[in-house]
Image 1 (cartoon, rainbow, N blue to C red):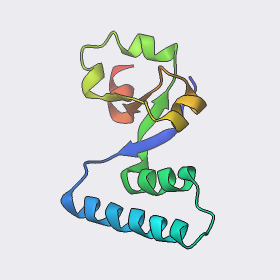
Image 2: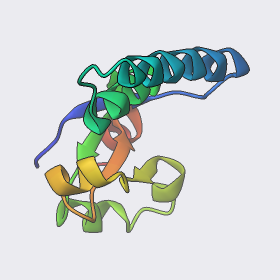
Image 3: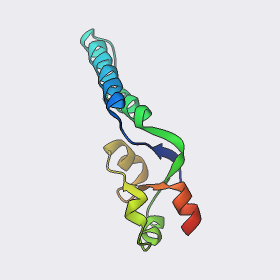
Image 4: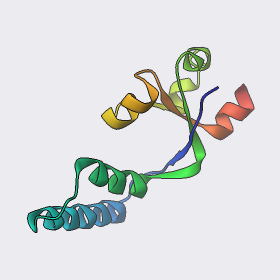
Amino acid sequence: METSTKNLRTITEEDIKKLKTEINKAIAHIARGSKFDVDTIRNIIAKEYIEEDDYTIVCWPYTQELMTNIEFHKNACLINDELFVDQYGSSAYFVNKKWLKENF
């Protein structure tokens, strides 16, 4: 099974403020004429909300087997970010590692 570890966490009001600050820094950086591409901004956002160890990326066709479990959608999130879709495919999911281990 092709996997990569990622952890998702709940976004708090403080997290949103931090994210806005980071985005504003990126915009100021761009305004000064410095090189700062879209992928760099995506990485800033992902770094704030995705950490290692709790989630893994599961790709097609392995996701098909996981979908048979009634709790799948409570423990998985479809990857729909263009950067990740290009890398892992259109049917890849972030899946809770603990749930995966307990059920498969």
